[in-house]
Amino acid sequence: MALVDNAVYVDGHRVATPPSLDETFEVMKQKKGFGWIGLYRPSEEEVRAVATEFSLHHLAVEDALAGHQRSKIERYGDILFVVLRPARYMDDEERVEFGELHVFVGPDFVVTIRHAESPNLALVRERMEQTPHLLALGPEAVLYAILDQVVDEYGPVVAGLENDIDEIEDQLFDGDPEVSRRIYALSREVIEFQRATQPLVNMFEAMQRGFDKYNVDLELHRHLRDVLDHTLRVVERGDAFRQLLQNALTVHSTLVGQRQNDEMRHLSETSLAQSEEVKKISSWAAILFAPTLVGTIYGMNFDHMPELHWTLGYPFALSLMIAMGVSLYVVFKRRDWL
Image 1 (cartoon, helix red, strand yellow):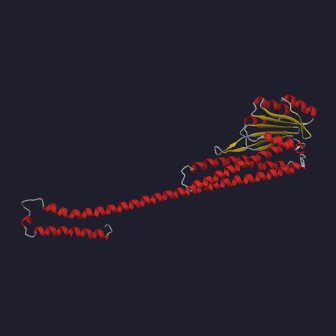
Image 2: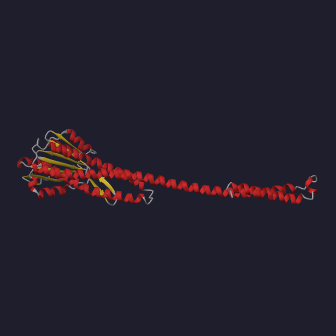
Image 3: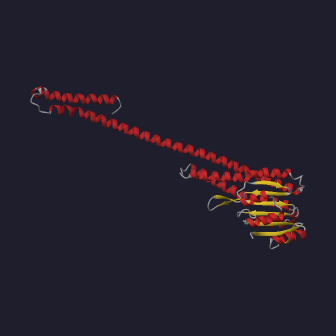
């Protein structure tokens, strides 16, 4: 049996710790107290056995068996069914681990079905047993204590997410290529965190509306309002984290665009510099080509060339070479090619 702890309480004190559920049911009837049964990853047969004994609604039982439920509170007659999504921050892996907790609260019993390590319900039980005046208020007081523990355990998660976001802000301006992947991964965790925490506000408000109808003790009113205040702060931090990550993603996209623009500008400047060099090389090639052309023509040694036996042929050829070179130099200089 996946039985973590099992006790019967009368007037806020533990009066029995039965070794099995069958004995728990008998002791509850004899002592006229309420039972608090804690199950950890029970089998389907074990859940259905508890459901049969306490007449739990079949829809709530199916939800508990299926798992992967959103945070919610539902009432089936005089029985409350509460689904919570506890979380804890894994420092070594820098990620958030989410669990699932199902709580059935009836007039004379509390059944918790835990599917993860969080929350630590042993601490809740120890705390309640040390405050018998609060435990004497009945199963609703146990529900309050569980809610309080779940919300308190969100505190380290908020601190861990805040630290991760601070690290991302540092990475943004260091040019770390992995920062975009980390932003997306952390955004998914924040969204999951919001899905776990945001429904709690409506859950507490629904419970407050039922206080008078179901004669909930005034002391529990005050405690639940305190937990609601803590929940609102956690929800606000989650909303702020999501906005910060969206801003970080925008800044990252802007910085990537700026770096690309800088690279394109550098490439353009390099291309322009290369173009200037090509102009200079082409200009000097053209200037040197002109005398070569003249010299080539006059060096063909044909017998029937009028200029071969001309007395002024040589100075004319030199003058032509110089004139063509100077002319090309002047033209290229005016066009800023040289």
